[in-house]
Image (cartoon, rainbow over all chains, first blue to last red; front, side, top):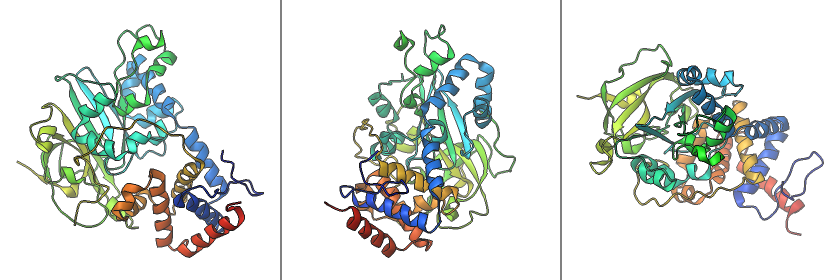
Length: 210
Length: 101
Length: 103
């Protein structure tokens, strides 16, 4: 937490070193509270909601899909229901689609127009996903982008880039790493990185855990 | 490839070839510039959604518009320098699509 | 009508992807939460926020940090909807400077 002074009612205020816009959000917040447009509880709930969301949720789904083919089928056919099965709250996603990677297909997800991302499943997007360079290059140079992240699909692999321009939110189901047969679900989840669920990398190799 | 999201009937079905319109209208548009005028095919119909072109300006988003997953060969979008198997897929509303040969 | 400054898929001249990540500052967490809270209360829609960013000055769009763009849009939308005025926000900021400004 910042070392800015706080009021008796407990929330922070900006210190003078913050940028113009940074200070403005505090002013806007205070005014909205004064006018009853939103409440302190509203804000706190949103902060807590966001903190509870992380790639660990997505990793749980993927690991379960790897070990349980029937679950995988349910995940692909009705992702929101599959999330509910695993107590992952995907209610605020309008529509959710899972893109399954195979030996012959790799998916990658971008929002060229802004930064749409499956936040309820993965939490906040990384800075790079929101960057102008990623938004520009993902659609016309996906292999170049993947290469930067260490993924080099061969020529006989089809790379499919999804530009999420509407209400559909996409999650990549990465390939189960070779040699991971002996691992349990919890260990498998550790191989599922956020970046592999965006599609710029594969999941970590099984050897990572040894 | 997953469940049909809605039973609304749209103008197009999976496999239909479509061309993205090149309308150049003002306002909040969610059809990216790079795909306008390009020809691809319908992968999937996602059903009806409130129209962002109306919502963006405080409208009610009605009437709802049918949304499709439209696939394009990268070579058709950017030219023959790209990997020939690769695809780019964009979620596009029906009113931005015309039938193509 | 020109291509919007946000509509950048496929534009040439992009460089390598900077993979460094930063921990969010308090003000960014607050911007995120206020945005979500306003949405949850039905005060504004995400579509309106996007449109506000699209209507920004292009130089400003490229120069601002991600959450600064959000804050600018939140302000634009709240003023448009006559929930707040620019003058009120300016006044509140001036209050901060008085109370918590430079020592």
